[in-house]
Length: 538
Image (cartoon, rainbow, N blue to C red; front, side, top):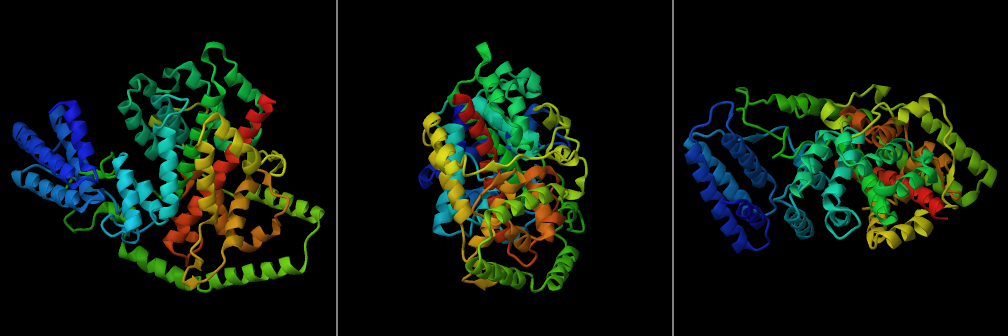
């Protein structure tokens, strides 16, 4: 079977047409049996290239048996793996317990148990590649997932100023800035699939000068976007033979901010490696006790569950207290309005206090070589600026906003993307089921606005019409630590931090929080980048 036939076979398994899937499955079964018989029994550590290739295909079949949205493909892949095992070939099994280290697998949507709308979204995602663990966790909120996948597909696959391999390489650069090996590995594979030069993957110095020049913008946007000036933009647009066009730069900026914020979501939800990738499966048999070491590592033991139940009992009433505060704040709003001077003071106080919130015990993270080679100056980060006590200048939304300025600039230079981003921001910000934990019929708009505005406040962005005194009333310290870590140093996010805030809330509500954090962060970075581009243009 040549390369084109193999590609057609995998694409056939993702088809919405049952007959196409049947034909592709028949081809896969025949190909696998032919390969297995030609190689014979595999040793414990396969060393030949044909054995290694077989293992990669077996891992992909395992992924299909668990993640394919089509029941017929899942069942046939299970049967195929068993048939291969019966011949005497070791087959892989998943490592860990599901798409997230933080959320029990039983609480995440199973591909076999979703409603018609989610099923359609999963099928669409699968046809575009595979249903990755990020999509499965976002599946708690189908309306958002649909918008997210549509936007990401447009940025990576549809017509645009940048070539396909440049897009994936920029994704690698952005994800590596936060040491997000999940996203780096994903785009290394995609980069090679679209014909990218493997030499570029040896390190940023092996990439073209044009991409190397983007390193400074990547670094500043990821960690201190308020330092971005029109001079940075000018150096990229006037670099003689290595210069960027305005349209290319807008495309690059959107990709950088998309993957910086997606790295936040990946760490914030404890996303695990996809089943068919390194770290997602093993060929070793389960331990004799039936209790895999990875269960303990991922916190899926009975002891942890018992301790969790005890914690919930200890924070009983957390939700009711928060609801009562929201009610009191609403009453205060109705009774009196603070003066502009007082509103300014409250913003500056909250901005200063946000600098003093520590991120994850402020421990140092040393990036591994396979990730750090994709960026320069690994010591550069958000925490350095807060330790030196530098002042973040205030960015007034009244002077430059996404709605009035950024949206039109993006749409003009990269058509349709402004619209896609705007829809995604709106869905994340306005998404509500009118619930808080077990309470129904709750207006959560005040809480959602406090979370969004707190993130923007950390980046120095101010809304003149918002009373920042509400933030301290609604967001407790453990929640603020989680927000700051996930937004500013996501690689330091831990399971304990995830569990320490909103302990009575559902996992779906915490994922919703992560969507808010991700989109608010992306918009904050975009505002600084687009303002600098606007200043250069004028």
